[in-house]
Length: 137
Image 1 (cartoon, rainbow, N blue to C red):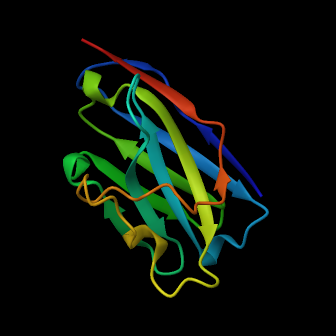
Image 2: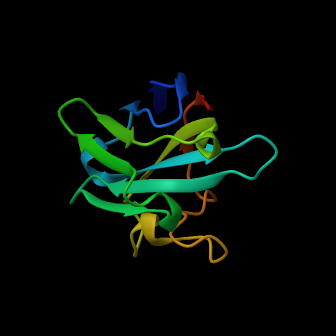
């Protein structure tokens, strides 16, 4: 299984970016794909997630309204649209995947109780190499 992220860049505050995560080697239409970010000096946190079988989407509470996750099953690709970027969005962004097979609940619903809506990163089997966003004032 391979995940390849792209789309990170240096942008000014207020700008927008669309990150892409291309997935191969996994049944794409029966998976959960999550986006996680790690800011400098901070723990990795889940920011958004999608179940590709029914396209249900999930967001960390702090990014709702600015982040939009979507999937193109024909391209085996998940996108993360980020609008109104702020310096707090600076960090490394990773996509991760897990097959839905064997899960009794949606993986996207397993969240960190300390961060509302943030998907926990444990048990996500497959990870990309990451793409970096720097937001300047």
